[in-house]
Image 1 (spheres, rainbow, N blue to C red):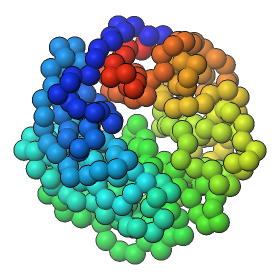
Image 2 (tube, rainbow, N blue to C red):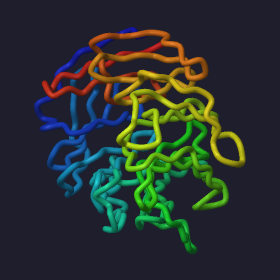
Image 3 (cartoon, one colour):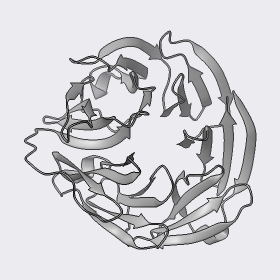
Image 4 (cartoon, rainbow, N blue to C red):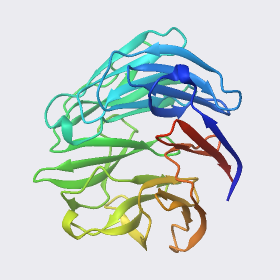
Length: 310
């Protein structure tokens, strides 16, 4: 399942690396350190170059646009973030997700592209998503969004026309939702499932038709390890097509298979039959470059392992 495994130390000049994101080219990764510095690392040559800095501290997360031209440094389980132009090193957009229960969810943010224009979907209040042009910082959405829904981590579909939102509703219940991006936000809503006191766990798109949600059960006190696979192509609620006992940890997909990554290693599953297709013991990826088909493991020993998959 894996080929071209590379093991490399992180460059010393990159600092204490908290997160990585694909850099837009083969072998290129963006790094984020604990002072908010963003740099570009070529994993093959080992070269690293400082690009920009965001004055952010805390539990930071790094996002990158598909072309590697912009990065966002956001305070996960916090309120603020900054979008950076990696060509100039300047901040283009300051993000404010609001302070109402922001500590309970990752900062809702995702880059996307429309007609060559770099955009971002991001939370501007606990129950509101907006779209901004990240080159200029211009807010492109307007109007009321009267939702009783706390937006969480956002996952963009491969076709870039829908968002999987790992949010929740009071009292609290985790309710993953798929939003369409056509016709403005909020678009058409499709509820995937509901789990009491349970959100902030693994989920991923599998192509444009299916999503995988970690955890088998309806309550955090009665949750079994595994994945639930839902068809999200209909107009009503999502339809559960498969339940797969076993997958835990982080979820990724190549559009055909579900990858799960935990302390036991990497496993590949057939999302429609639930069959275990392949295992890679000892390799537990933490990051995914879907464009260049690379899985990467960032460990605490400052060594990175990366492999392409077939």
